[in-house]
Length: 90
Image (cartoon, rainbow, N blue to C red; front, side, top):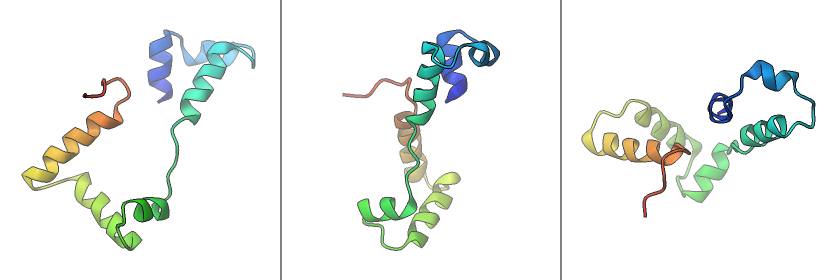
C-alpha cells in the first residue's frame, strides 16, 4: 500500500522521512496506510453467516490455491475488487 502511494506521488520513502511531521505528503501517506482496515474473523463469520471460524479458515485455505474452475473464476473477480486502481464495474 505504501509503495503504491509513493509511486503515485512520485516521491521516495527517504524524501517523505525527511519531510516535516505535518507535511501534506507524509500525512497523506499515513492516511492511505491507515485506511486499510483489519477485520477480525469473528466479524466476518457473523456478517457472512459462516458459522464457526473453522469454516472461515477452511475457505481462506481453499482460495489460496483454488483447484476447481468456479473458485478460480471467483478469485480472479475478487482480486480485481481488492485492487484500488481498477475502476469499479457498473
